[in-house]
Image 1 (tube, rainbow, N blue to C red):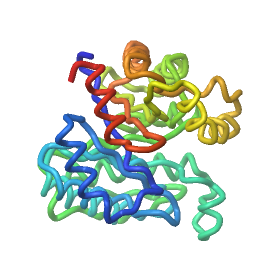
Image 2 (image 1 turned 60 degrees about the horizontal axis):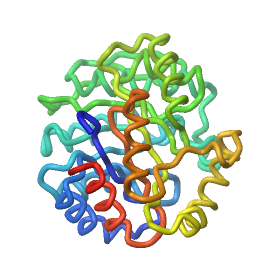
Image 3 (image 1 turned 30 degrees about the vertical axis):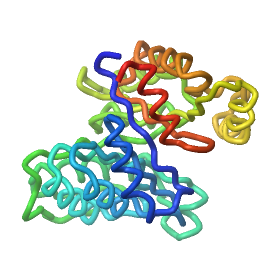
Length: 290
């Protein structure tokens, strides 16, 4: 499938000590990306990205996503710059609002999530370009901060967002948009409309996370996906049967990836459910002719 990047997520429930081996095996299978997760109480996204980058040679590693309220923009830019200098061209930095309840639980919920995300992304991107940043925003204050070692090739900063105003914000200030699991081709078309309304140009990328379960037994596949699609349907406010997945037999999964590409996806990151995730990944890549 021409020009579609295929990634795999290292699920937040998998032990961090197994990440290096998984990353090496995924790279050997020929996947383009590996994405790590930063959810409150699980693993640190920047440290996990460093582990995956250090264990591999060519994989692009994405952070999906750092919650803006948990991170000082200056510190986040410092961390990202370090990785981008050591592993040039191999990092994508995702930043999002964070789960509101989680942010409340640690005392960092912003007064204006939209302002915080816009100011954070704007500041981080400027710092990564090596610029001095002075910002007196609604949520972020920086007084002449500048990186001593900015990367020669700043990593793309993408916004992990869902709702319409946030998607417009992403089009306005980010290099790309990261779309949560469960969104299908029609959602991507709507996302393009909203990010373009916000000001996104042709270079603004769409990265789509997708639940994935591949197997020959359709009942087993459905049973494996059920708790995930059910919970996500509730979160998205849509019936469970409308939660998009890349699933079924390998040929079916390949066709669903084609649908996402046709709808505008630049990268699809598979969040693989069920046993033997690397075997499932290999089956999908073979079905794609890779």
